Image 1 (cartoon, rainbow, N blue to C red):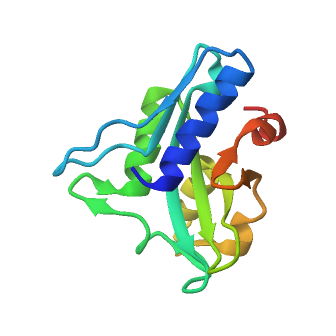
Image 2: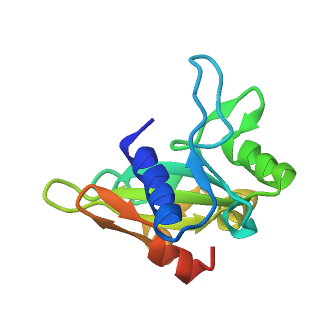
Image 3: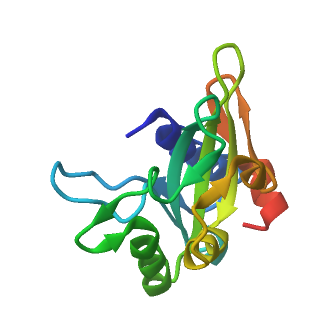
Length: 159
């Protein structure tokens, strides 16, 4: 599990505890030779918190785009965007792409929550990926120190 995935799982679980809401965020154990459907699952009796979240981290010093060919995997079951889209459709979960921007030494990281439908649409329209400036148009997951907080984003996005 990456630090970003762990921080996102912790931020959801902290939010549920602070707000006294039923719900749990978790990451399925990844086995060495099998792929997982997505990085973070959020389960709750509250429909708005029945989520599937794929996490990506991008170094903004080396790229200005999150590329479908470079940052997403391809397996015998198809492209990762197709696999996650199928999972979201079949499970009834709301999908998101959480993108962490690593902005270089001395600059804090920033993260954004992109609705999966925007990812699917770009992929379906044969775009090469999502531009960093486009990603920044979506709600920011606020960070303090080493941890993220999803409280504000839940209010902003109504999730």
